[in-house]
Length: 130
Image 1 (cartoon, rainbow, N blue to C red):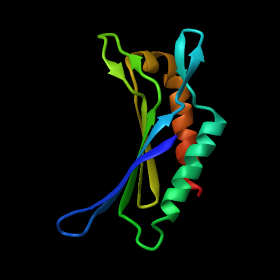
Image 2 (cartoon, rainbow, N blue to C red):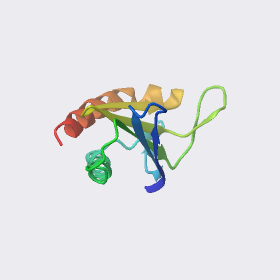
Image 3 (tube, one colour):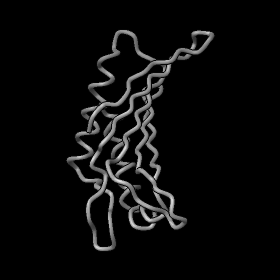
């Protein structure tokens, strides 16, 4: 995984500061029985937690009001109408609370939703404990 962009935006009134960090080439997919499945294992979760922890520590003195991470997968899947989808994990930290969302294809949803829900719950719990 490599960092693509790290940008901070401040609202016109100065009350809100949003730091946005994009990462690319995440190894989000592995071969499974019915095609590609999402690589949501413990090692990947630990890596994401470490990245987020390190990114947050870089702004400890001047903490933004929210930080958003966008983790783009290195592969592409297709949906039923032929669109190419890059699986993406998005994480937001605001007021020390974390929210995680996934952008995925319909195939990824059908094959991975149970694993995604388990990963999301454990990931948010682990981030909150840092």
